[in-house]
Amino acid sequence: MERQSMSREQEVVQQCPTELFIGGKWQSADGGKTLAVEDPSTGTTLVQVADASPADGMAALDAAVAAQAEWAATPPRDRGEILRRTYELMTERADELALLMTLEMGKPVAESKGEIAYAAEFFRWFAEEAVRIDGGYQIAPNGQGRFLVMRQPVGPCLLITPWNFPAAMGARKIGPAVAAGCTMVIKPAAQTPLSMLKLAELMTEAGLPAGVLNVVTTSDSGGVMEPLIRDPRARKLSFTGSTPVGQKLIEQSAEQVLKTSMELGGNAPFLVFEDADLDKAVEGAMLAKMRNGGEACTAANRIYVHSSVLEAFATKLTEKMTALKVGRGTDNGVQVGPLIDAKQRDKVKDLVEDAVRQGARVLTGAEVAEGKGYFYPPTVLTDVPKSARLQKEEIFGPVAPLTAFETEDEAVAMANDTEFGLVSYLFTKDLGRALRVSEKLETGMIGLNQGIVSNPAAPFGGVKQSGLGREGGSVGIDEYLEVKYVAVNLD
Image (tube, rainbow, N blue to C red; front, side):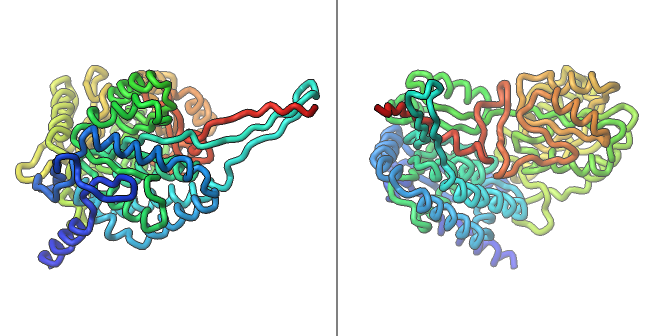
């Protein structure tokens, strides 16, 4: 059985493209350079993929620019049908795509299948939005003319995606770009390029014309992408990743006044009031904290619990966290895979040790096991002081820090005490409190009595230093469209 499993893993990797995808063709990187894709559960190399140079990046932009006019003129229904067929192909091949994702990213196969379904849903959603790009007709206020308003594709787009959701974060950008009539150059994270390369192959099978989607894999993100950002032919940049990198990209984008959308870092507060249903709150905390092993911008980073229920909540949460099975994502029953690499594991370890030095108590976890792979155990800390680094920094790991609060105002103040503003979670049975607190929380999204907010049909995005713009929902396509106004003289 183990031999069959390994054979299947090798087969899935071998069937995945490993070259750059430019102008509808698979090709080697300039000079034949490659980069290694690692299995984070073992630390071993899965495969080598093309390592693009700045010249390769420029060739990809050339291809996108060349295809833009014809693609923009393609009927919206045709663009939507390509997205619909992509959704169907992803659904049919979910097992293969999920295994490939688990091998390069580490999450359990069951969770990878969930991401494939989530990613595919973006293509189905925007297949329906492609034919709903509307405009307007208006009589001028003085009655002397008419206004025509149309929405047109912004033009060639640059898309940069992270390693934690290697299919969904790409789909969330590609879907609306295709629907709007934009061509693209996408650069997936160097740690997880295989899912995007496979997606490009599927979209070609679904009928996407050459040059509309170009995929550039590289170990030199800045060297390859900065010249494209500064190139006047590019008209849109969409980035998902850390706030510091996003700030640099916004600065670079200013040169050409490039249209940008940024989904950046998070520091999500999770509030549990004294009247909350504790079982539902714990269930919500497990979802908000442990989705993707904690490696998510939406992860509950700071858990604030009313002092009267803190002990009971901590006991229930600790029981569930301790019971989680940690291991290689392909093994049966595994619920928590490895972190993405040694650097990320060491960061999580340092954050926990810093909190403990400052007085936090460990209820479970915090002991790094020896052996292969970048594993970190599900961890619960209580009595976490405000000065601990993990109260300010994004953990991106399976660590749940608990802090007590006494009043509603104190909880809101603690939640808002951050430069980030992506998502908050709130558990209470009091409708008035739910509305009051939701209005006061400084985040772009709120999970009210639920631990997950992501949905292709809803606008995803944050405020403050968590980003610009929204992805998904009826407004998601707006990021890829420009408004044009025509003044009509009736004489």
